[in-house]
Amino acid sequence: MTTLREVRKRAELDAQSRGYLLNPDAEFLNGLLEGLRVNEERWGYPSCPCRPSAGVFDLDRDIICPCDYRDPDVEEFGQCYCCLYVDRETHESGQIKPIPERRPQEKQMLALGFETEPQVAGAESTALPSKRKLYYCKVCGYVVFREEPPYVCPICRAKKEFFAEIEPSVPR
Ligand code: SF4
Image 1: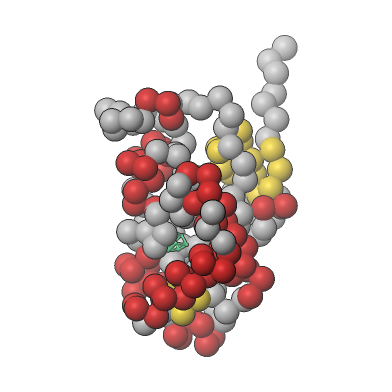
Image 2: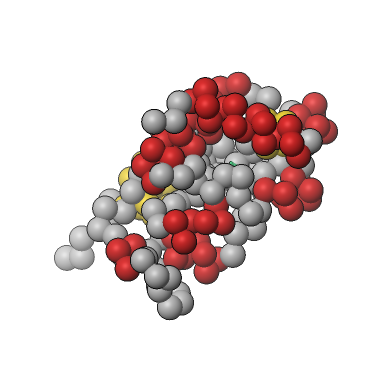
């Protein structure tokens, strides 16, 4: 089992190798690292803690941390989508903000269980999984459809505890 310490070390080395830094907020950083650790334990790979994972390697490949979108996001916005990796300027200013999602919408839909294109080999079991529910962030209203809320809201950075389930209304 991968420990939090190992996840942190890996992120630190990765940041160093690219000239990045990790989020300066220790508590927030810890939440992200714990999210990576849990995802690795659950799926066998550390998928992004602020995005829904399909649980199928081929569908999640682009969001295994560090994801395919990190470098262009740090280049353009000074931080990755989750704010785990930041550039020096952002680290010093502490000005961390929500940034747009660069992951293509089709990939997001596939991760949520919607079949928007022919199935990837081995992905059959991800179609409309029964355990997924709708959750919303009580702080900013962000809505996700997954097995459990994200560790950190990708929009306002509220923690998992600020998410609540949306109960489906029963038609009369
Ligand atoms: S957005 Fe950041 S934390 Fe999420 S997978 Fe990409 S690099 Fe990792």
